[in-house]
Image (cartoon, rainbow, N blue to C red; front, top):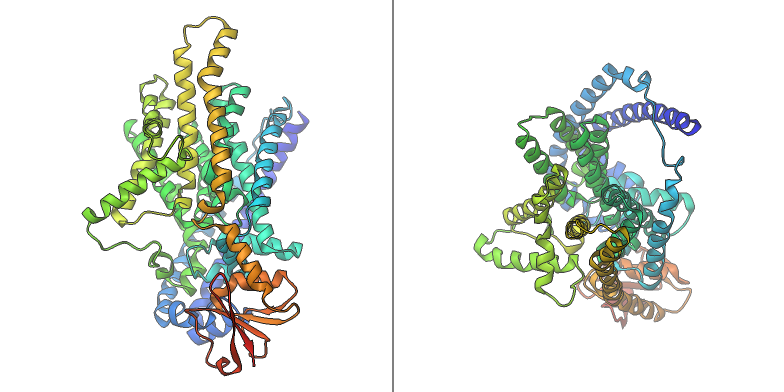
Length: 579
């Protein structure tokens, strides 16, 4: 009873805090919008540079990002944001009694039944996997880019300067604050953030399996492959936003099924909140979000329901995403998000794109199972379609799970064919994880059906171990071995440890204690110099002992006459020494 009282008080306090947070957020956005609209491009440029002038390709920012066209469009974006926020303020003030006077009693069973102890082995497994991975896999170029060029900017610049698609704004924003607060390396804090998300993902998956399987031991067996699945495990120790995006994806998945089952608005609020966060961590959350909307639409149509409440919250979600990306829209432009080379629509004929799409789809199916047995083995394609068996169960929730599974992949297919562009493998982390979880659950149900007529509990458990637990354990062993051999290469399709060693040797060419300046694309060299005994700067003054650039980046004209070529590094580093 005491825990229930504490939980109820916490719930009541959280509602009051959420009211205050929403009011503050809306007011901040309105203030920013007024400031932006009233300021000239020249004034805003000086204001932006006043935070920090030395950032990635700072000379190109006013030419390729914050242009006159972007400023003009940004005024309209800011006006729309102000209208959204004013509407939001009016709405929550009209409903303020719900935030302050609604009383709800929350029943707690977790501590009463000591259910939390069940999660200790799960957390230990996740932490052990993370520790092994982060200790053996060196920092990658993409990690260093996000840490140095994004997370280390001033907080507003993190939100506003969307220089490349790997600017995972929410992740880098949190990572930057955490690193400054702890006075530590953004790469290490980033990996720690991913650890928290990884532990969260495995615990959520275990919770979901416990509810479906209704057996703790089988749930331990079923969750293990989800912990060892390559993308889930590998990006659990990367200082990138993918694992946090997956965490949001799992919570959105559980909450939307809870909403369909109960119709509770709270589940819809949870879904909306984590969908907004999922978009903020990595914009490719869009693949999951569209699938979720289509899935709910199909379920409601089958029940002949409109469910305007659901669509209202989807509007809230999109409005929230719009407001979070407002600084990027105003200072980097819509084209930076939707028109870059990584995401813009291809112009080739669909017939020319289709063979490539089919090859990518086969590769992604292989990736779900860690290329089990061998690439394109028929077993993997059989397992991929095995959730179709869920449609033959009488339980409606199982049919809905099967519908969700195929909706997830069909909507992704439609998006890719429409764009004529396939995402990177790492952008499929939500699809990989949820698909494997549903496949494992389907196999468990099929094993249950086969053993339905077995009366002896002991005999049934022995046979279930042979039909379910043993194959799962063997599959885990494969994932562990395959992942350990391929992790250095398959993260970004380059050997990150070799890159790390090359940069270490390149930096060692420069005498210790020297002052070094690096060009924008030599951010890795800058990071390794900073970790060593060097006085390093990202923006050259012209009096540094050495200047490091790449073969396709000429020396800046203002300092070119002061340096002569010194050495060429293993990673294409062109090292110049001051005359």
